[in-house]
Length: 536
Image 1 (cartoon, helix red, strand yellow):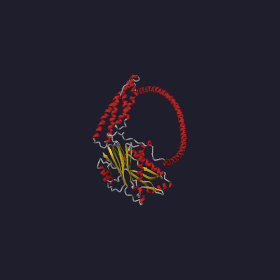
Image 2 (cartoon, rainbow, N blue to C red; image 1 turned 90 degrees about the horizontal axis):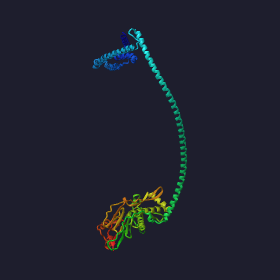
Image 3 (cartoon, rainbow, N blue to C red; image 1 turned 180 degrees about the horizontal axis):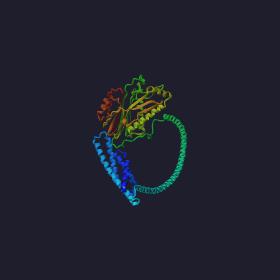
Image 4 (cartoon, one colour; image 1 turned 120 degrees about the horizontal axis):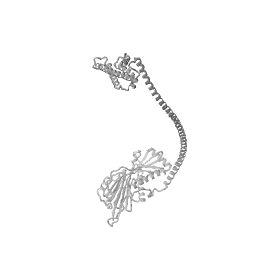
């Protein structure tokens, strides 16, 4: 009888809470929530699990919510199969959920009955009111147990809170200690930075003082340099143009001479043929005609078992490229002394070659000897400019201001031959060189040696082009007995006649007479330098 009353009371309570609901899922959820109130109160006392029934109800509620969503979506299309199927599913799920709720209610009812029987607080003769009071008493007992457990938990929590407070106080003290050390370190660092700043300022001041002293010293040095330069000019004006052999970096290139295969004594035949071309238009008086001699410079020098030969052709008229003047000569002073010209350039280089060979011998590279001679000529020309009288230097500046620059140039053929019949040859420009009995090919070369005289920052400068291997034709050959070097004024016919034979004997008077009588037809100066090895 008691079980029936309790069960009915549960059912009434459940249905009273869901009377206002409309959706199936909401109705079942509210029924389920009402039953859970009683279940959670008696769960510990009953000792049974209702997980199966709980899972059954929650699954059905979730499925109902999905189907109800579909119904709402197709509310305006009720003939849709989705809507019809969702309605059918709702009905089936509602029935399943109601069945689960009935099973859950039955189990709760059994749980209540077991608790009443176990505690002997109820019997079958008690009224429903007495049963409710017994249930309330059971609930109160359960609450007391929960309060006891809560008190124990509070005691533990208070203990932990007290421990945490102690740790917090210790951490606060540690923080204050660290803050103290941080402030101390920051202060020390600030003081150190200040010291560095003061030191840097002091260093800058010292550097400024040093720079001022250095500037003063530089001015003194510059003044001394000017004085030294003036002294050097004076020294250079009185020293000879020769240089010590130790000052020239030369490299020996010829092998030691081998003895001759017979008892004959070898000799060098060295001879030059020179003729001057017609004089230039600027010569008006016959007594002045000789000033144009020397545009072609041909010569030779024999020393022991070596013989050197050279032909240089001063290329007058080159300055027409830079000036309307026909003349590349610079004449200064009341006497119109000639200081610079292409013919003087050819002469100066030839004379310096002669000087260097006398000092150092002929065992060296023709290229290096020629390079040293050109550098020496540049030094001499710059010294000549530096040593000009004040009025002559002013006149030269006026000439350069009017003409921008003066260009002088010359072609060069310079070589060395040994008794071993070895030849070392350097050609710059269009000079012609023929060898016998073994002819060597001399490719065309238009790189003359030039000197530019110009103004720079108010000072007169001389620049010679730097002699480089790539700018010259350099030849080394053996088995050479005769060398014929010519300026470009020699006619092509003469060149062809000499080249036609590989064994011309220039000791034969008829050969030399024929060479002298060949018609040149050239308006240029003409020079030939001949070296021949003969045996007696």
